[in-house]
Length: 488
Image (cartoon, rainbow, N blue to C red; front, side, top):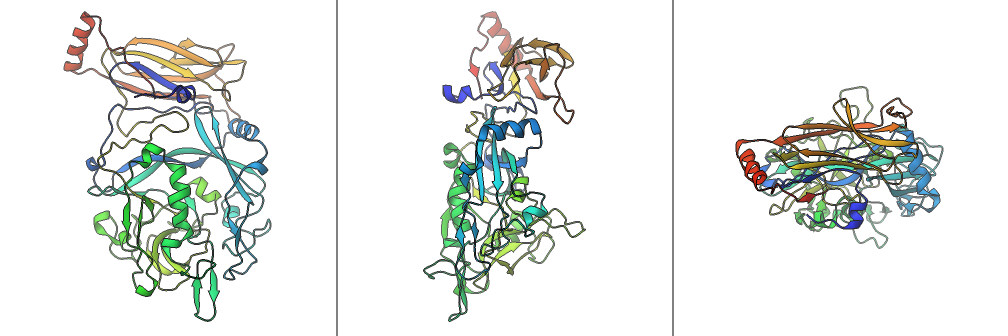
C-alpha cells in the first residue's frame, strides 16, 4: 500500500510494522486520535442480513473537551467567512413560494492533529419549515436539543455505521440518522389546481423525489463529504422505484443513484429484517440521531416514554397528497399523509448499494491520511519487527510537555513534544500499549475535566500459530525476517 508524503505527514499516531501483515495503533483521547489498518478486507457477501459494517466518514459526535474546542475555534478564523449551508427561510408563510437560501447557518472543516472536525455556527435558529423566518427568539428543535445561536460547536468526523439489508445485492442502510433536512426546500400552493409544487416553474409536485432537494443533497453534498474517491468507486447505482404506493398520479420519475433513501415498500420487506405491517411499532425501523443531526435541527421524541430519543426519518416515496412524503415515526411505524415536505426536522438515513466485487474497508485514505481497520482484530505475524511511534502535529502537545509510551504501567519511552518512538523488536506475544502526554517531571497531564491525556492504544495480537512460528524460524535462520514497512 502506497501513501503520498503529504498523507504521511498528516499521520498522527500509528504502529509501524516491519512485517508482512499490517496493523495500526492508538492515540491519546484529547490531542491524538489514531486508527488501525488490516491487510485483508471483508467482502460484503460474507455478511448476512442485519450485520453491521463501517464505511465512509461524517461529522457525528460533539466534541466537549474545551482544550480541543478552544484550539479548533482559534485556528478556524472568523466564522463569518465559513461556508454557508444555504438553508432556506421565508416570509412566515409556508406555501407562498417565497422561501430562499440564506447564510444564517455556516460550517467549516478543520484538522486537529489527524482528526477532522466540522465546526457549526448559526446566527439565528433554523425554522421548522423552510418558509418560516429564521429568528433568535422562536423556540426550535435546535434550541430543544440544547444548541444555541451565536455559539460555535465542533463535531468529530467518525466512521459511518451501516446495517446490511440484503447481502446478495449489497443493499445497506445507515444505522443512525446522520443529518436533518427538508424533503423539498421550495413549495408553492396553486389555488387553481389545489396542488403544491416543488419548483418555481411549477412543473413538478412538491413531493416529487426525483426533483427533490433531499435527493440533490444526498447525491451531491453528502456523497462528496462522506466518501473518498476510492470509496465512491465501490458504490453501485441502485435503481430506485420512486412511485407513490397509493396513487400513480403522484409517481415520481425513477432514478439510478449511488446514495438514496429507502422506499415505503422497502421498510416493510421482511427479507430486510423489517415488519411487514407498516403500523407495527417495529424496533428495526426505529433510529436515533447523531449529535450533528440534532444541531442541524432534528426532531427528537421527548414524550416521557420508551421512545424518547428516537426521531422521525424520511422515506423517498411520495404520498398521495402533493405536499407530503412518506417517513418512519419515532415509534417505528411507516406512514404517509403526515410528513410535510418542507419540514426541516426530518431525519436523513441514507442507503447504499455496495460493490460486491470490491473489498470494503471501514474507510479508505481520507483527508486525515489515515486508514482504519475492518471489524477484525489487529494481528501481526510471529517475530515481526515492531516499532511504536506517536507523532503530534502542530495543534497537539504544548511545548512544556512531551509524549511517552507505556506498556502496561511501565513507561518504556519518552520523546519530546512532537514525537516519541519505541523499538519493541520482534513480537512474540500480544502487546498492550498506551500513549500519554506528560510534563517535564513525568507527570501525566489531565484536561479540565480531570481526565488523563491518554488513550489505550489497543491490543496488538501476535499470530503465534505453529506454521507462523515455523516460517519465522527459517526466516530467522537466514536473517530474512520481513522488512516491509507498512503505515496507515
